[in-house]
Amino acid sequence: MSATVQPSDTDRASTDGPTKEERLAAFLREKAENGELYFKSKFIADEVGLSPKEIGALMVKLKDSACGFSIEKWSYTSATTWRIEPAN
Image (cartoon, rainbow, N blue to C red; front, side, top):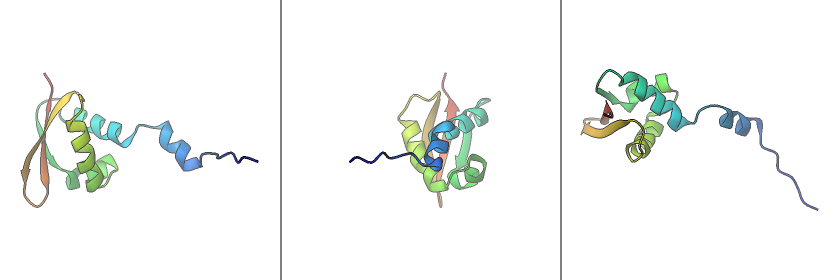
């Protein structure tokens, strides 16, 4: 006899909307559309709905992908400052 595993409501809900990476990329695109943007993860966490740690991990992923803008670890003073610039 085999058991069938049904996805939970939370699993289904998480696949209906944009991923965390997509949400962050959309937010950054919007904020940097008129030029460069400097930010620390802890200051945008509430706006994006992610923790600073999640943002930091996703920034590394976005930096390595072709996402429509250039991403640079700009400085570190009590937390990483990221520099975002729209790709030409």
